[in-house]
Length: 118
Length: 108
Image 1 (cartoon, helix red, strand yellow):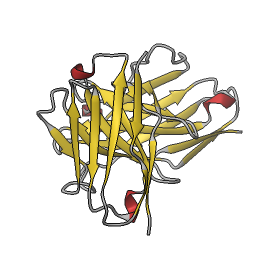
Image 2 (spheres, one colour; image 1 turned 90 degrees about the horizontal axis):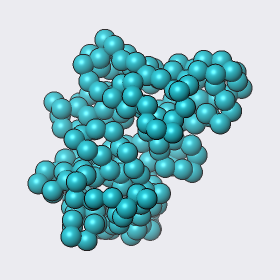
Image 3 (cartoon, rainbow over the protein chains, first blue to last red; image 1 turned 180 degrees about the vertical axis):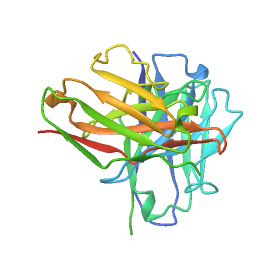
Image 4 (cartoon, chains in turn brown, cyan; image 1 turned 135 degrees about the vertical axis):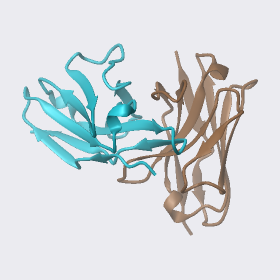
């Protein structure tokens, strides 16, 4: 069955960096676009970034552009999010989610908590 | 950037019909997806491409999209339908995914 498992979360000070990973299994990873979506405590869903199935295209929310970098390794079925210059407002549960052709998210990970605090 | 507007909350009695709206400029020309997000769980798509329903989602869930409003309709509402519901689309003019602010469905 489709599985997406995020890792790499934790507590980090403002201005520092963190790298999230998402391990995929149970489907052909290289055929799917993958996104990061986050949800701050008590808030709604917020799209963070998208990477196309082959890694050739990336897109970012304005709130993270220039600070976050999405990447993937299709040989290892893994997705990454490098988060630099973290801010307190980046505190959230981060989900990886798959889709095709900019369509709906058809699978989600369980999410990983990132807390940015001094 | 494109904005999607949802009611913060909707309350409905069991067995009745809930209608959750998602407003956006000419949203009828775009493809809208709806997610159910129960507390502590990952979101689940309940309607995609305006009105398609994934396998495993009850027929009680339906969707429509026209002009400036997309609507998620839940018929014969059950207590288990209590959740936050989000609309979402891909805005090709900005190359951004957009989520609505979410609607909390309360079953009285």
